Image (cartoon, rainbow, N blue to C red):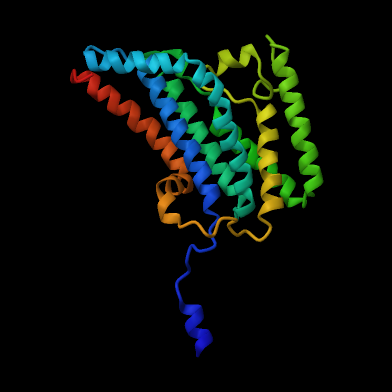
Length: 263
């Protein structure tokens, strides 16, 4: 009888690895902020002092050394965390296809509105395309029980190859256009471009960290009360939804405010 009662108790989040959600949520808030500043700086023309002030601030942020110094670190942390999260995923194929599908939706939308808003918004291979591809590649390797040592080797190889070709300042693509950093790909996907190399290396690094640190799939910081960090963990648990909604709501809201003359 006691066993039946125990099994009937609702499941709790006591063992949820909240720190992964927190890091992903924190990085996602930076991404949302970064995109909002882009919208203010480049996508709209404002006719009020308030709109001009925010636009000037957004432009100064976008061109600042602070953004240049921090942007890749935040994105890198998000990619590493995405790889780490695969340790807790029940279906890597399904999750990755969902992310890739969201990326393709953004491609359709940005290409559809390019004439009205400028070709600079086109995203043919952005962060979602890259993460979806990384996830699918890992799902295949995982199905073959890829050992941790090989994950580490692949991570290093991808990073070395990616940074090597990035340093070459290529004018023509090598292999697939989305594989390495090159000027032609930047023209092909000017709004956002994340080549598979070296980012796949950071993704694999996250997978390796997750496999080594979270074999038991339990938090390392159980002493922390999650309610104090819940705004970040909530965003982290629903990062894809926040990414898509923030983009759509931000652009629609700014368009509406400029049309009625409030910005």
